[in-house]
Each structure stands twice: as structure tokens, then as C-alpha cells.
Length: 116
Length: 112
Image (tube, rainbow over all chains, first blue to last red; front, side, top):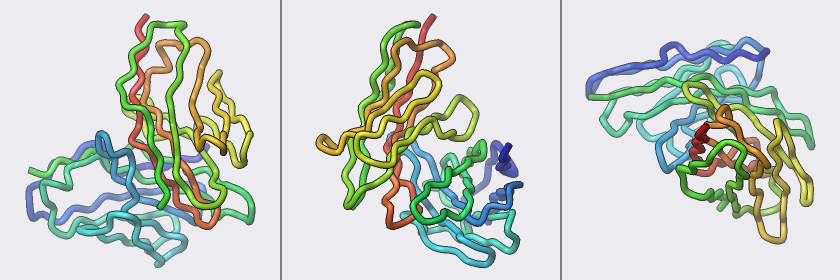
């Protein structure tokens, strides 16, 4: 079974702190994604990566950065946490799609971050 | 741009009731459509998918048919169980790219 793990299930930080959210997948997937989930808004894509050291902005990248130094690990960084970044953060991974096919995204359990 | 709209929740049903969760979409071209489910305390799991018009996706008693004429992909189940209580997300993927666009999610609560 594909396994996507996230470093913490719950995290509480203070405004202005630098926050690292870690995601590791064990299936050698090329693609990795970071989403945030908020009530009434569904999932919104923050950043994604199609390969090591490669990153692309999603729909809401402001206030976030990412790092992918190894294929299995994709980190989300909040340089200076703010209260409006209180949310559930979900990581996902998928194999690189071949033409005309869809490769399912596999999700981690999420990290619920509270910024005070 | 691409977007997905789901019916608002929460939806509360009794066990063995019929379930419909409405989903409509706006997209260019011919997107693929998906339903994901999130059980309490867990990440999202793919429930079913359909990649072209008139396709029917099905899994675990759930079904959804890709209706291009009405731009809809409604989720149905004939007889829900307490274990179906979860949040359900409709999503689309434009075939020009790999990103998923999610609806806002619909919470389902099934009472015994």
C-alpha cells in the first residue's frame, strides 16, 4: 500500500514563528502536492513538485515556500506564521502520469496547524 | 476558469436511506471527474472516477455518472450505512494538466 506520512497530526505555533511541515511518501512517486483544507472552501493547492528540486506555485502560494531535496520528501515552510494560516494541511503524492491516463493522488492524514 | 460546486452540508440521513450529493462543474475541454472521501481523522481517498462523458464510476455501492450535457457528476448510493459518515469531495482534472480542482466538500452523517 502507498503510504504518505506527515510529521505531525497537530501543531500549535505562535505568530511570527517559522514552521516546517514535513511529508514523506514511500512509493517512489514523482509528483507531490501540498493543500490546505478549510471549511466551506474545500482543498486549495499551495505548491506542487514534479521532480526533485523542482517546484511550482499552486493557487494560493503567498506566505508559503517548499523544499524538495529528495524524491520521497516534500516540505512546506511558513516563513513567518500568521493567524490566517491556521488550517488543516494535506500532503499528497502520485506517479508521473503517462499520456491519456490518470494517476491517483494518495493523501496523508493531515496536519492541523493552529497559529496563536 | 475551472471550478466545482457541491451541495452544502451537512447532510444527515438515517441508515438505509438513499443518498444523493450534487456536484456540478465548469471546465474547458473534457475534464476527468472524481469523488474523494475523507473519513474522520484521515486523509482523502479516491472513491470513484469517470474520464469521459456518459462514463459511470462505481465503488463500495456508490455511483456517479459523468453528464456532459448538464455538467454534473452527482454521487448516489441506494442504502447508506453508519460507516459512510464522512466528508465527500467532488473534483475535476483538466486533461491539459495534472492539478485537481476540488469542490468545497459535503459532510454526510448517517444515524442508526
